[in-house]
Image 1 (cartoon, rainbow, N blue to C red):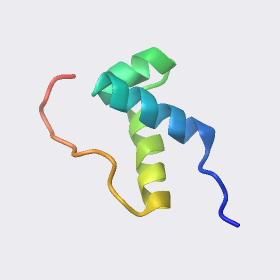
Image 2: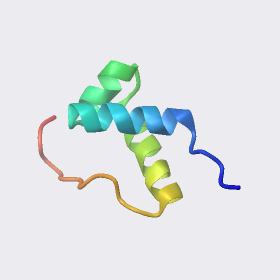
Image 3: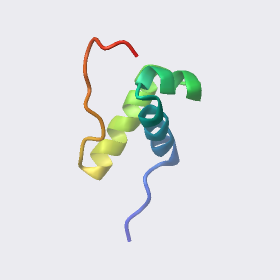
Length: 60
């Protein structure tokens, strides 16, 4: 049976998707932007697919 992904990673993904910003998600969750990015990356690796198109230099 497949295990569910960690709730923290799902929560970070949901906030980032809704806010369209890792930075805004971090502020909402009381985390750093790097922590949100790490959680989303871990979820992407677990699922084996990218969940976001990352663009450098875009304010957010």
